[in-house]
Length: 297
Image (cartoon, rainbow, N blue to C red; front, side, top):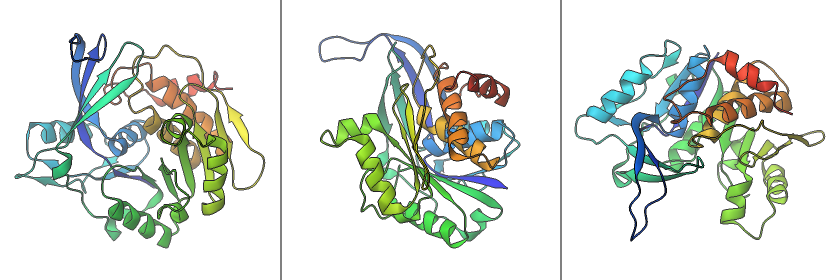
C-alpha cells in the first residue's frame, strides 16, 4: 500500500552562515548547495528511500533549471511515484533559501509565493493509498479537498501544525502533530498540552506534541498519555526535522505499530536527519534509523 504525500514541493538553496546578516554586518557563507525541499517532498523522498511505495503531488514545478533539478532527484527513487507532479513552461519553480546558522537553526526566504500553482487532488491519486500525509503550505481549499477525498475512501490522514479547534481540516484528521515551540511563539498565553487536549477533543484524533530536541508527548484517542525522549545528537541543520519525524511515524504506522512505538521511529528519524546538512541531500538508510531507535527513551 502506498503513502501519499500531498503538499509542498520546491528546490531548496542551502546556505550555511556564520551568523544571520544584520543591517550593519554581513554574514559569511560557509557552505552552499541545492537539494529538493518542501514538506511533502522531504517526507516522500525519505519514505521512498526506505523502500516504501510513495506517491507525491501538490505544488507544481516550472520547466526551468530548478524544476529539472527537482525532477531529476525524484527520478532516483524507484519506489516514488511523482507522475502527478505537474510542470509548466510559463512558470517559475518554487524555491526556498534556507539560512542555517552554526547551532543548526534556520530561517527561510521564499521565492515566488504569489505565483504558486498547485495541482488539485484527483481520485486516481488515491488508488492503493494507505495513508495521506498533508502539510499546511499552500492553498487551504485544495488540502481540504484532499482530506475529504481520503476520508471518503477510509484513508487515514496525518497532518501537522493545526493550532485552532475550529480549523476546517481538523474534523478530517486521524493523527495531528503540533510543535510546542510554535505554540509558545504564536500563542504565548496557551499551554501546549492544554491546547493539544482541546484540539483532540474537537477532532477525536491522536495528537503528538513535539518540542525540538526535548521530550515529546503522545496523546492517544484512548488510553494514557506517554512521553518519548529523543536522543541527544550533534545538530547540523534542523530544516525539515518535523517532516522527517512524520516520515518515521508513517513508517511505523504502516507497519501496524502502536502509536507510541511508531512515534519512536519518528523521533529516531528526525534526530538522525538533524545531523546532516540539507533535508534531502543525505537520505539515511532504514538501518541507521533502526540503530538510532536504541537511543530513543
